[in-house]
Length: 220
Image: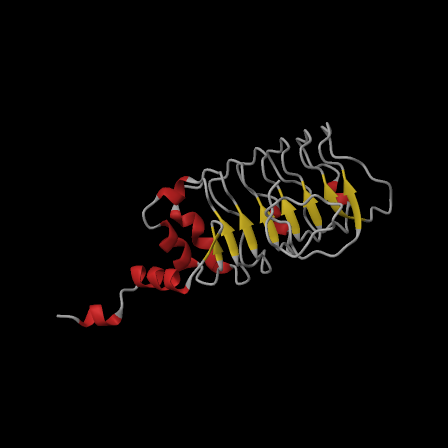
């Protein structure tokens, strides 16, 4: 998977390189990565698993995840998932769905506590249904190597007050001439874009691109 600088995951849970650092609480950890699981594993009651790694298996469905009512960290990167079902009501803070076959993020709208999302290496064309109302605490979005091409896909960034890190490298959108301006115009509050720190100068440039300085406007 991929996760980068949220506060440190439990050492026994191999968090993706991008989300590695997400602010999570220690709890019961289950690491079932690098296996041949084709179905979501079953757990014995009382279902106290808080951190679960199922990276690099053969999962095509999340049926059964809904039983894990205490789950805060879920790494399901490198599987064969085409949909995200069963996440409603789970207290997930760190979610890694990188390297699957997702064409949308439908299913995460009910992850109200989400802080970090890694969704690189899928087939996404936008970030829906991420929204400020559904994800007020979201700080990090990693969506590299997808099919995001329209700048309107970035509109949601302005709705996320806690957002600090976004990464869209490897998307068609990043090849557009004013890509950086588009992002920073919508989300001047971010501090990292595509693996680079965002400078004050870059933010001013973006602001001036869409709102020319007043002295220019006053010239005859």
